Length: 395
Image 1: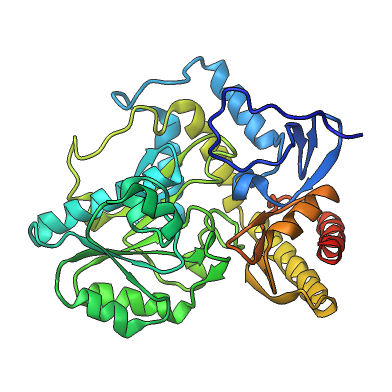
Image 2 (image 1 turned 120 degrees about the vertical axis):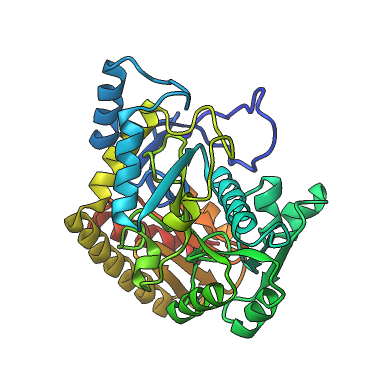
């Protein structure tokens, strides 16, 4: 059964959406308005980590609603926000947490916190940032300045000044950028998502940590897409054992509800004062209740071990597929965040996969990104890879 044609209605045309309208979901599947089922390997771009209609998310929402306190603003403290902040600090490093509404907002806040720290400790001349080619940190003016996407940036120039770009792996280039003493922080995705699902080598992360310490700059890890269990560890930087000064989170944090966060180390937190930053909705009792339930679930060692097992099963299947298809150049990623690098454009494969009943999303022009719910099964992985192989042949 085919779905009826979808009208955009009053929505602004900012997304190149297929003629498809989704209306319900369960676990690792979604259904369109025509009743067709799709296996979901996108999870809302790594957002619905516990799957659709998750009992954990539903239970947290119902419990929060039963208390009748959906919103209070940050004029007042609520227990859910405190509990979630404590969970994030316990799972990462000592410090404090700021809640907001999205990943771009989290990175904007991290930039402000870094400048506040630098201005407090070194004076106003230390205000620049180093980001990396292949990066994606958001589409606000500050985060866009740190995002290496000319097509995203050029229509909106000038963006925030003071951002220098370096190449991943180029230790000397980063050192040269830091040597002038004007850099407040270095920001990097531990696994580049939009840049093609590229894990950053642990030795390079370690080198960044050393350079930041040497030149008195902060190290910011953007874990918005790769964080909270996606790679089989609670945070992707834990694979390398390199601890940042600031960490940004968002996508899976509240199970599909909009939420972002910045975890700031003690030395950064102690420089922040009331009024330095604010948000009306961030960390509200409803979303924070869901965030706490999601974080507790994912942080369970047994849950993370299961993600590692599923990641091994997924990469084994992808590598087997690569061996059978001349279309595939290589497989990249960690855990349940994988990229299938093709010999040509990814878009036709994404379309053919959707027509075959599988939702995947590109990560750059030639990479098919695979980020299913962390609750997927081996059988569902195998089913998805079968559809993907047919899509490679058909496209």
